[in-house]
Image (cartoon, rainbow, N blue to C red; front, side, top):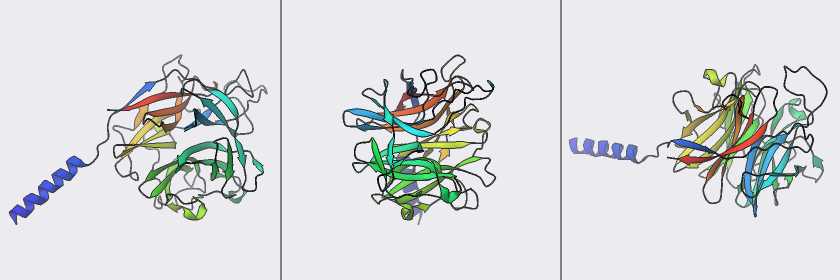
Length: 338
């Protein structure tokens, strides 16, 4: 019996030593600063980045909101109208050129407008986009939709309704800020929603069979009893949103935004060894702060979007602004695991 106990103890020690451990994550800023000037030369704008490598170039998708030049109170952020998404291209991930507004169609080929915060991923050779758009079925509350593309420019809805409308006791029927990644034979979908008072931005999780059509009937909500993540620390204020995930050597790294836009949003980090259960890095999850006074991102560094290139190098794209009233630009850092 004593020998058997020693064997079990040795096996437990071995399993503990062999299990993957989170690594230190280091960011190397690159000299990128991009804002879309199509609607206003004086007020470039871009936020909510996501990137893929397509052919001989990179494509970056982002939220765009044309500037409304109507005079207003200078103590408030500028007014905008007509939220939608746009696309830029690059050959080096630093210098970007606008391609066009997103060409989105419904399943019958009719043009659609209003897609925001797209998550674009290549899954089994096909380009998929998970995006948010308001829907009449939830009285104008935004939810996540799914579209596919052959060229990364024109996307067509697979179904003309949202794929995930959370029905929980802890949230409203809202789903935004989509992020998808694979864990074994499942595609995991992370999303942001709000608590039942619509005050706190919190996050949920769902899964679908990998390789399915990812339609509304394929998703199983995993965050049944409560959110995946909710604000806990002072720097997060009332908001945890914009999750984005990359796996490295058996550990999943979840970057997320803490605090609402226009409140000094910053980027947090949590890790997981199974892709389902996450813990913030100590002591409070805060990973990437806004820049110093005078920097282009002195007020905010937020809404991250992670991208792994074909050579394995990982990049973290994010949005930033210099002050409350300043415009949003996009930038990027190389990500190193040590």
